Image 1 (cartoon, helix red, strand yellow):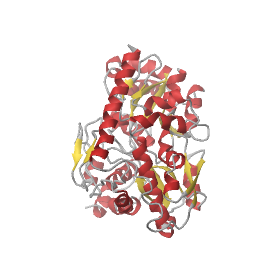
Image 2: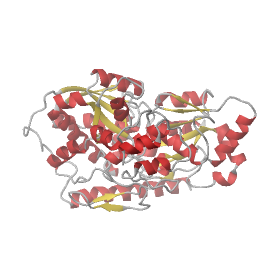
Image 3: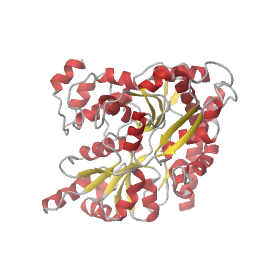
Image 4: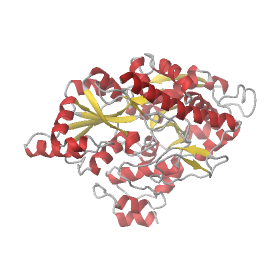
Length: 465
């Protein structure tokens, strides 16, 4: 049975990704076109660069762009620097010690606003991936949840209903709040964990303790009982499962189908001084993402990023999510999840300004932004689809002609027609059935019963009519 499930999972992954690759070829848009920019166009202002990464599977676009020669093809000599934490990434890009980096999707926004650090205008013109995270808990907490509400634990996707019952009983006994971890205050992981908890009535500010732990250290802290659960990117959920010390409850794909995860971020000042270099980097990253998505390339990607110099994790652990399945528990068979890691299809590389607005709403919801701001204006300063389009034109690939899209409307595949050519898109459903319309940001924010906003909705409404 285990072998059969693995076959089904791989087969579904092959079907989805092969269709995507075929769409590129049928449109006359091959994923690679050798020498397209060699010796043509404006030369990069700088050729020797250093880009930072965190050891996660979604650092792959940068790593593959280097290892497979895409940076070199576009005239760039890139060194990849593995960093210890997201704070390191933020600070080194801010001071120029890194030319650009693998960043959390909310990080360029936070840096530009000065949330949690010195204000430094930062931009992104490239989204590195969709999905890729999950929420994992200790075996003891999982057992307590099963005992508290076995019916809720059988639901799919798994709600936090049983967790609320366990937390309520725990807190009523006078014990210190349970400690959960996420990777950074402005991370997707923080907002996803909070979103999931809050939907069940758990107040993430009052009912539990949330702390920051760098991704590679999550498993060790779970094993040491320093935390009872966490939200992190791969391979650190599957690592805990493989070791038998934890169980994954829900992936972020299940929380929000095809949600944005990481971006390639650079200082605005750096981008203005080096526009051709920036364009070359974005082109190389787009081509790397194209190359990575077809199934026949995924195991090579796994072999490369698993190396000690990058993710430093066993191939068998890294390949699980990267090849179209996901294992929630050590004693369970892998389940098909072909869209757990999406790098190119579904316009995954496009920096949607509607995505930027969503992250800003969550920063406001949880009190990280304390003064009213024009949300769309900030999104348009940080997320730069104009630069992406310029890069994409040269590659002759289809790209969106709009900057904003509504999320939560599609439970199945659909087609984006507001593009230079129709782009196949995946589901975008939220697990709580909410619809997010970036044209109605204040209504969206006001729709959350649980929040810790420090900005008066009336003041926010004046800037966001």
